[in-house]
Structures are given as C-alpha cells and as structure tokens.
Length: 178
Length: 287
Image (tube, rainbow over all chains, first blue to last red; front, side):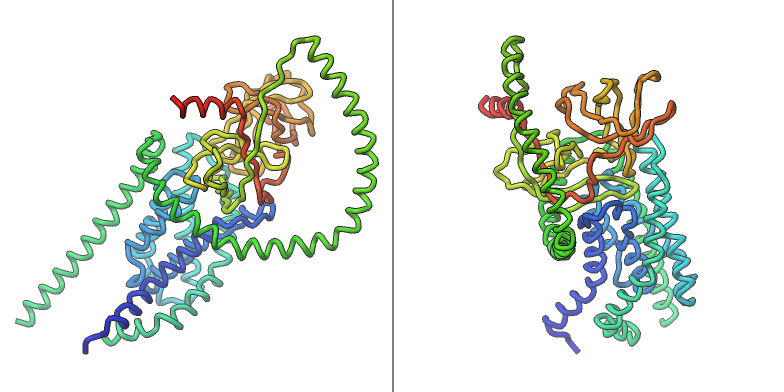
C-alpha cells in the first residue's frame, strides 16, 4: 500500500524528533540562568539525550544527527570549533559499539553505562583542550558538571521514554513488523 | 538461489557497516583537524562560521525568553520582599551622598585649576553601547557570553565589556547584531593589571573557574586581601584604571583575585567605545 505525501512528511518529521529534542537541549545549555555559580552545576543534557537515543533507537539517531549537534554546539560555544563535534562522535561510537551490552539490561546498568561513556567523553574533551591551551584545565568544575549530568540522566531518560512512547511507537511497530 | 540472495544480503549489510565506520572515522579526523586548524586563526574559517551563527543566535534568543520571564518573576518577588529594608538603607546613603556631592564639587573645581596649571591632557572620552545578554557559557571548558546589540551600533573585536563599573571581558567575535564576548575568567584571557594601592604590575589570567590568578607579580610586592585590581593599560588592548576585581587570597606562591561582580548575574552589559578608537575607525572607513 502506497503512503500519501502527508503520511510520508509526518513520518519524516517523527524521525527527526530525537534530533530536535537533543538540539533543544544543546540550546538550553547556553541560556543564561543569572544565578551565581549555576554554570558549574549545569548538566550536559545533550549528551544524556544522545546516549539514550543511540542506545535504544539508533535507527532514529544517525551520524548526520551527531554532526548537526556538534556543529551547532561548536558555533555557540567558546571552545575551539570542532571539539564538541569530536566529543559527540566519540560518545556516539562508544555507545554504538558497547551499547548492545547494556540496552537489554535493567535501567540501572544503562545508567552506569552512561556514567562511563560520559566520563570518557569529558576526559577526551579535557585532555584535548589541555593540549590546545598547553596547560591542564581545572578538574573540580568539570567533575561538578559530570556529577550533575549523571544525576539528571534518569529524568532525561524518562522524558525521552515519554517522547518515544507518545510519538515514535508507531514507527517502532512498523519496524518490528518489517 | 535463496542461499545466493542471503549471501548477497550479508555482504551488503557488511559493506554498509564498513561504510558507516569509515564515515565516522572521517568525521572524527575532520573534527580533530578543525580544532587545531582553528588555533592557527584562519580568517576565512571565521567568516564561514558567520552563516551558522546568524541562524543560531536568534534561536537561542527566543529560547531565552521563557527563562528570562521566570527570572524576572523571581526577581520581582525578591524585590518586593527586600524593598522596605533597602529604602531605609537608601535614605541613610542619600544623606551621605549629599555630603559627598558638595565635597566632590569642591574637588572638581580644585582639579580643574590644578590641571590647567600642569597642562594636563585628559584621557579620551568614552561612550557605551548597552547589550542584552542572550547566552552564557561558564563550565570547566570555556567562559563566554553572547550579547545582542542593535546592528547600527559600531561594535568590533577587541572592545572592552563592562558589567556595572567593572571589566568582565572583551569582544571576541561580532556576527551581525550578536556579539561573542570572551570573559575574564576564560582560560584564554590574559590582562595586564596593576594593584591600585601599590601600583605593582602583573598579568591577570582566567582559568575557567570563578576566580582569577594574578601572575608575574614581583616577589616582594605588597599584596593584601581586598586590594583593588585595575587594568594597567600596558599593551594598549585595555585602557588603564578599569576595575576588574579584588584580591581574595595572597601568598608568596599564589595570588587569587575575585571579579568585582558576579558575572553570571549580568543581564545587560556595556560595550565601551573610546572616541579616539571611533575616530580611527572612521578614518579607516573614509580611506
């Protein structure tokens, strides 16, 4: 049975929901809170989203999405252009390669998986920026970001699960049938 | 036939997997190259970023609106609670200001007379552009800010950015009406400063934390906590005597400076335009 143009458009749009959601998280990261020292506790929501979607629905989160995320993040950030893209690609490869070990396990295991992937990504970012600036960047503030992100992951996962069940389940069912 | 088709399918999926790995590796290498290519400060590369920034900055501005609304509501409630105490304090301050105003007037007259006697040339005049902060970044990796200024305003790279009366950074990039500001707490920020009380010189360096480090100060410098740190004007990038912050910790090995104001609270910042600088700019334009 052939699908009508509107159905194809709706399906295509649905496929882009994970990207839009993650992009929104990237943009939210740059909204000023005007609260002193709040920057250091600001979780990296984009990384949490990226991990979730690559782990559970890698069919909806392609390399293209990672590139878009990286470029947008680099354009807004004060870090050297390409750094965030590299870190996102690194996290993507890690999750894609080792995700199969955790995606069928209880949620707690995938949470630990996220903590590991995010730790390695932050470490890569830290080491690259340290080489770039020829000095070691201060670690405590990065650890605060790490802790905040790992703690908020279950909430982000719940939001993503809600989006997946509400808008993308139909797509999943089609895939299953296929 | 079925076996042949299955074999073909397996080979095709293997090829797709290989292709995906190849693309990922290529992107990773490109990104790595970009990071260090960027360090070389290529002008064409900067121009290419313009298109992206012009699209993204307005989106951040829109997303910021609800956050701004929530913050304003919080601020209003806080203001109402604090208004009575503030009024009492302000009345006391007003009395002091009245006394000080008279004293200031007398000093002004005296200063004018002395300047005339010394043939002193006053520093160039300044004008300000007020910019609204639309995005901020201050994690362990970078400290920067994006502000919005009307496009007709003459803002360019290197201009000084103030919050209240203190220096907080300088213009790093200008993308249409959007200005990317490198904050003094960023690891790339190095400012020649003096300690106002003793006139001891040093370099104030950001380190991606909320405090700053004072480097290259003479080992016998008399530095005490709460000393004011101001720009020295050496190098000509920053004008002299702009307040940056106060000494918070001072030891032989390490001097820590805290910014004069909490930069994260900044909603509006002032971009300083020196009239002399503007004239040079106009001359360049006319040529």
